[in-house]
Length: 157
Image (tube, rainbow, N blue to C red; front, side):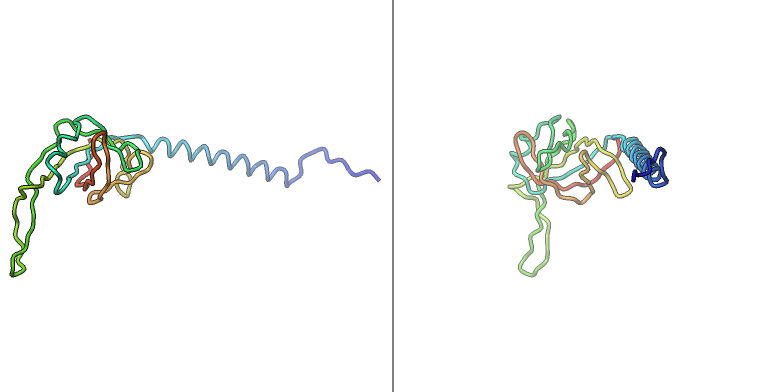
């Protein structure tokens, strides 16, 4: 006996083709929506390095780049954004009272970095999806140094 030849599409074939078309359409819509909403903006990220060696300030290159610990670029150091002042120490006396005193050995370095990324509902996301938030501590490196910075603020430029 010969089998019956099926010349047209059956219902299952039509459903499979429709599912494939809908899947591809969904991927295209998602790609274009996320691509459009991830338009890069530039933010000014202020940071501080507490109790730094005074020689560290000269290692920062104004206009140079800072990178994350894994080598990804964080941003560019603002030319006029670097300042240095004596670090504040908080020693306690024999009675346990905490005082405030400027340090003769350490400096507090403050600066700004221009960072490309995008603002989201949860904060700011730098390139390659790295989230940044005030109060966050990051290990960064540049051409001449590696340091731990504390992020103070993130503002849209």
